[in-house]
Structure formats: C-alpha cells, structure tokens
Amino acid sequence: MEMKEMTYKDAIKLAMSEEMRKDENIIFIGEDIGLYGGAFGVSVGMFEEFGEERVRDTPISEAVIAGAAAGAAATGLRPICEMMFGDFITIAMDNLVNQAAKMRYMFGGKAKVPMTMRLPFGSGTGAAAQHTQSLEAWLCHVPGLKVVSASTPAEAKGLLKAAIRDDNPVCFIEHKLLYKMKGEVPVDDEYIVPLGVSDVKREGTDVTIVSYGTMLYRVLEAAEAVAKEGISVEVIDPRTLYPMDTATIIESVKKTGRAIVVHEACKTGGLGGEIAAAISESEAFDFLDAPVLRLGGLDTPIPYNRNLEAAAIPTVDKIKDAIYKVMNR
Image 1 (cartoon, one colour):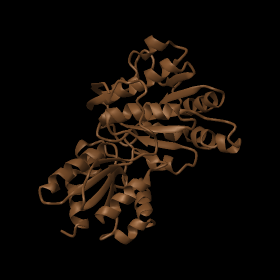
Image 2 (spheres, one colour):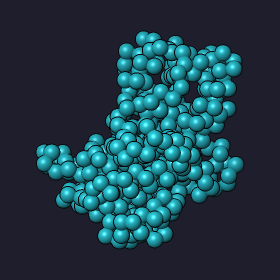
Image 3 (tube, rainbow, N blue to C red):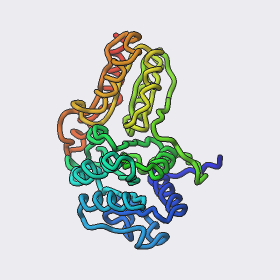
C-alpha cells in the first residue's frame, strides 16, 4: 500500500476530500470553514475545490449546524459538520441528542441520519475552561450516537472515512494537540479503518492499559520507561469509544491480570468507569490480581495558567505511579 507522510489535520482533510469527490451528496458545513479554512486550518483549499454549495459557512450557532445537518441527513444528504471547538457541542445537544440520535429508532429504521460531527477536544493549548474540555462520556451515554477517537494520522483518515459512510450520526473526536502530528498515511482512496475495532498499540504481559487520544502517547512513554524495570505493559487504543470493542480489552486483561484506564477527561463520570465496569462484569474478573484502576483528569475546569493546565490531567509520572500501584511496587 502506497504511503505518504502527512499531518493529522491533512489526513482529515484528505479523508473528507476523497469522500466528497466520490459522492456529490456529501456536504461540509461549519463556522469559517470556507475561505478561512477552519479555526485550525483543516479545510484550507476545500472551498476552492468544491465550491460554496458544498462547503458552506454557517451562522455562529452550533444549534443551527446540528439541526441543519440532522434535517439534511434525514432527507438524503451526508453532511460533515465542524464544531470550531468541541466544547460548543453543548449548544447543539438538543438537535444532536433529541433529534439526530433518535430519528432512525423512532421511524422504525425507515429514516437514516448519516451525519458526522467533527469535534476538536482536549487541553494543552492554553485556551482555558470553555475551549479545552473532553466531553466524550456525555456522547457515549446517548443511544443512537457513535463516538470515535483517532490517535494517529492514518487512523484519522481511515476512521473518518468510515464515519462519513456510516448511516448513523457519528461524533468524531480530534484532539487539538494531534493536528500537527506527522505520520505515514495510506493514499489509497479506499483505505478504511472499520468502526468498533480496538487496536493493540503495544504488546505486554504484566498490565493492560486502555487509553486514547494524546493520553495514549503518555501511556506509551510510561510503558517504555517501566520496561527498563522489567514491567511489561500492553497498551490498547479502543479507537471507537461507542460501541466499544471490549472483547479485545477483556482478552488482554485475562492475559495480564491487571488493568488501568487513562483518559484526559474528568475522572468522575468519565469513560474510564464504563471500561472498568465492563472488565469487572466479564470473565476477566476472575483473572484480576488487583482492582481495575482509573486515572483521569482532576474534577475541575481546565485552568488558563499553563502550569495548572498541565497539572490537571494525567502525566507520564502519574501513569508510572499507577502502574507501580497495580503491580504492588
């Protein structure tokens, strides 16, 4: 398969552009995505290629974006929506949760709602409390929504193409710190990463760590560090947060006997609790040599101060301490 090095954000643009070239029913809507190219520059050049009918700037109203997308999707189009910041999904929750997520069910499957919501989440940019949240657990709680988190440029392309082709509303999480990350990406326009399949990022035998987004890279760094002390860590990236491939996680925990879940979002009510419960309710419970440990962000709004911002989420040292704890060291 031919590969090309590109950034995470260029892989997203490539996925959208390839799908729009294939299907004229795909439209792209959002705030300042046209001539400006989006708040993070993801869509630079798309307006010139596809024109104002298919790349449409919207009013500054996330409720309008979600409502227009739900209506367009139900009547035959396949909209891709960009939220300038994922935090603003809160303004769109009525149309997303009460309309888009429920239409197919309420019409007995006769209606499809193929819409993709691109959501820049996460801290690390100094953008303070209203522009740095990680709200994926809210979305995973809603039946009818699919929730995806891509951790590499190749996955950004493959998972986004799968999301666009899905006949259900998909919330596609993009951590802002990943936009400039570079990696090898398949240039085949049929390259797809299927939804609902976890990926083992590192194999190990002593402890399983489940993580995604930027936290995945801190987990891998911690795993490399403790490997020098003789601790073998297996790292799993769910990729699709809902519906999640828990079978891969459970099999890993049965092998290692220990489990940690790491995410940036606040620990209380975070996705880590759901993953921990899935492990504890499965046959993996009988293989556990220590309780499942959750490591999440502090239960506080993300501070503007850079030092406090960094302290509010898991660090490599905190992840290492969690590993030592479950290993009883």
